[in-house]
Length: 263
Image 1 (cartoon, rainbow, N blue to C red):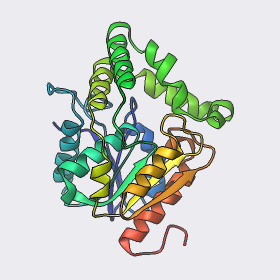
Image 2 (image 1 turned 90 degrees about the vertical axis):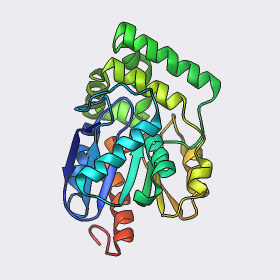
Image 3 (image 1 turned 30 degrees about the vertical axis):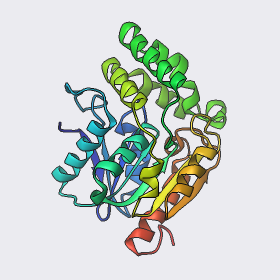
Image 4 (image 1 turned 180 degrees about the vertical axis):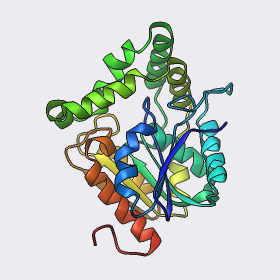
């Protein structure tokens, strides 16, 4: 599997994995805003954006292995690896399968707990509906909680951009990813065993993976720290990119042993 990847900048490699059901297009502001301090690598996870889906059974482990091969192809031994929402799930799978590839961890608007039964049933319902009927179920049910109330009320262009990304998600990839996420294990033991620092970010208005989930992850990591992004919902990197980038740049600078961006 050869993941389509957008990259920008030079220096310490930082891999950012996108949310469901978007693509690496969501990281535009990170590629632009962080390229002065690090090398930003943003793959399209399998089936999304420019990456093909393949024939494997749905699995976050498969997605994590794709990312490890992308590092090989980029000539990167170890990187800061992070993800938002589904990208965070893939990042935690990568921690289990390829811990030697990590310089640091970034978990944004995600959670370490497994899906309860009802959530798994709902994922399967959405998977079946999108294959049968197209993106209507995504626009009606998945899109609204992706952004916070401030974005919904005041940032029409941001909301419109997110809507366009959701609407263009390939149905088979959506179904595959829903089933992969439904089967994911609890990752708290993985976080407790982490040997590298972790930055946990959460939008103040995130109703899908709220602050309590973020605090639990930051508390589980031996060297974890939490940043709350004000006036942002589940897609904090898209809704408040400047604040997100400041937090990430500071973390990268800490790992690289140099002064933060603008400091």
